[in-house]
Image 1 (cartoon, rainbow, N blue to C red):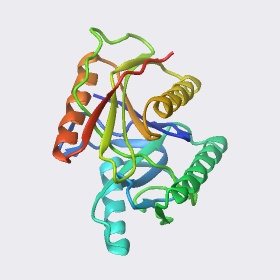
Image 2: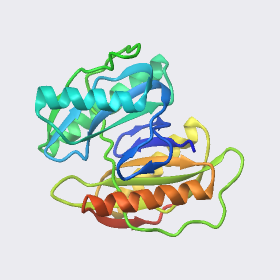
Image 3: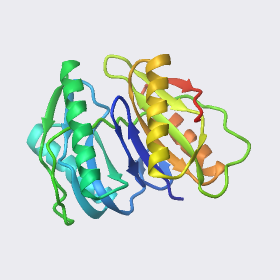
Image 4: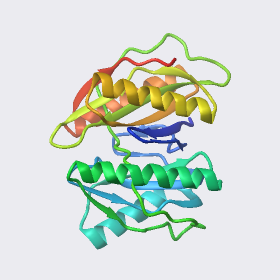
Amino acid sequence: MKNTSVVLGLYFVVLLALAAHRSVAGEATGNYHGLWLCQNVPIEKTAYFAAIFEATADRGLVVQSFKQVLAAKYGYHGEVNCGVGTGTGAADLAKAKEDRARYVKQLHGMQIKVHETGWTYAGASATAPAPATSNAPVASVAPVATAATAPQGPTKLWVCRGNTNAPSRDMYITKPFPVTDGLANWRNTQAALGSYMQAHYKPTAMNCDNYATQAEADARVEWLVNWAHTYKFDPVSVSFTYP
């Protein structure tokens, strides 16, 4: 099973292909190429961010390497998440830098300490590090109803989740909803979901996965529910569709 991941909030960054089927104990790994963005999750009092770098690498190895650096240099022993951007051109890098810088400012405004570590993955050809910030909290929520059948062709089922900053323990998850493939459409969907979350809930960054089949989307929902219960978050079901 292959999925796509998208990080969005008050800023919008497209991330792809983080993992295959997951269990609460950990997420599957795989080789992906693109712009990598790594950070601790969830972000509470302190945020740790790697530089933005281009590489073809195994996600599991990247995550473990970043964890080791954070533990050794900052004494952080929590979870981290690494996303892979859909584009690798100059415009994509510039957009990623812009989004990060905007979010750094937002985090500072919320009195959250930010460490921009400058770290890149040494096991791959890392290029174009960028000093800025992007929040991608890995979160979970309650069981939600799903559609009877998954869309076919270029349309995928998205499942999105997110959490607010401490001390809140609220976790949000959307019911699976269809989104047509394409960078422009992804960004429009992100913007719409970001606005929806601001209007109906507390402002929060949302991390999305997409799936080709209903079974895959249902499995993701099940994994998120287990994750939420394991880490004692308060699940909140979100009804969102686009357009």
